[in-house]
Length: 275
Picture 1: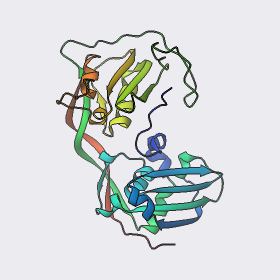
Picture 2: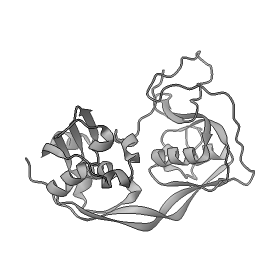
Picture 3: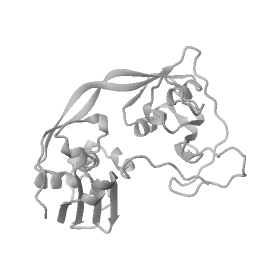
């Protein structure tokens, strides 16, 4: 049975940690080692965290460390030299007391400031965002039965050829058909929940201007090559709908527009001394 699809770095749930967490008093790393990771760099991979009893082991490129530490997406980060995309580092650290992942990542901020001499500021910028609105034919949303199960629990069993069960109140993306397609399912979800889900999936802020206040079901299959592009005018050779085409099946129009987004601007950063 296909497993839920995981995109990008393995810190996606933690990226939802807000600025308030980063501003609150938090523990710091008692000891930390930061070393260049040439093996990871050679493979072009981003391997993120392992947390256990206040210990963290991270391998990632510099920009991923910054994104995770400050809780920002690609479109919310600006500035910095080119090497932050290409230089990978291994970070092994221990907190002074056991903490969870939601505290671990903000603890990377003082580490980045100390070892990378990172200086940043935040500002609002007009950038491209995705806007959801009702298509010309109106919204085509329906609601039926759904099944509740733990977020990290196993998917309920279903017969071969039967419809995949819809999880109540949330959305899940599955990689299917040998990785050529993505199946997106959700039951009794709200439009703000859909916008938040698509923001994580598409890596760009998605705003809801449909005006729809109810809940609805989603069960879509789209091309995996196209899924992250949000808006695409080119038909996919697989015959599967594009991401924006799949949304149109729900009567939802997806557009790229300019909108204000809080952006983290890198003022300066230096390669750390190995230690």
